[in-house]
Length: 254
Ligand SMILES: NC(=O)c1ccc[n+]([C@@H]2O[C@H](COP(=O)([O-])OP(=O)(O)OC[C@H]3O[C@@H](n4cnc5c(N)ncnc54)[C@H](O)[C@@H]3O)[C@@H](O)[C@H]2O)c1
Image (cartoon, rainbow, N blue to C red; front, side, top):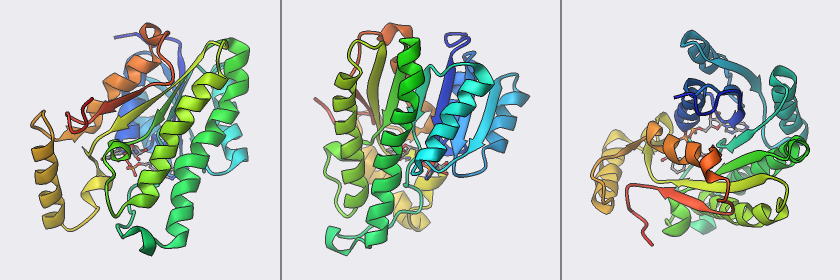
């Protein structure tokens, strides 16, 4: 598969988890990849390089406008353009569960800052080169919890609901520019982040409930998200914008 040969892809939160699966898949498909993460991206870059791919890393905080611009600049200086932006970074791993009126204010602010403001800043930084190229694919990562009203997680649910809304509105603002803006909403996906969200017994109970709710009877892993993201990034999706693809094994239907 060389579907993305010579395309330049910037993936936030690409150092680990689902983001790392996007990084490896795009690199395997011939893209030049920028791994932008608060965590050290060097092992992700080394993995890509070891398997013959092309990637560079940049350590950034998506909540800072200057860092968002630095990540985009890294793509332009390293590879000359920026074709695809995957806004995957989030405050997710390590989040606490509590009723909405007991969420610590700093947790609420961090969730909104990373999950929503970070997406807005990254899109803003990418807009100028994408408009100048008259080409761009922006894929924002939300969550299926937006459509199920998951309780005791409102700081996360509200931030991801706003990512869904931002995607719709922004797709119209890019009208006529050659830039599309879409969203992927994953369901529960086994990663280090999800597996550390409780005791092993709590995680097992949660996973049994999720399997019960899914139509496809196996848990999702990070590679299950790749198809939807790469479709939205592809030439075949040129007429698709302002859309959300839910990838959750059939928990949400309709
Ligand atoms: N795993 C799931 O079940 C699941 C379900 C629905 C949606 N999602 C979404 O998928 C994406 C990836 O999830 P994951 O399970 O791999 O989570 P994760 O916590 O393992 O990965 C998040 C990544 O974002 C990075 N990050 C956090 N704050 C940052 C910041 N301020 N600046 C830059 N990078 C930052 C982290 O370092 C990490 O690499 C997230 O957007 C998450 O909300 C995950």
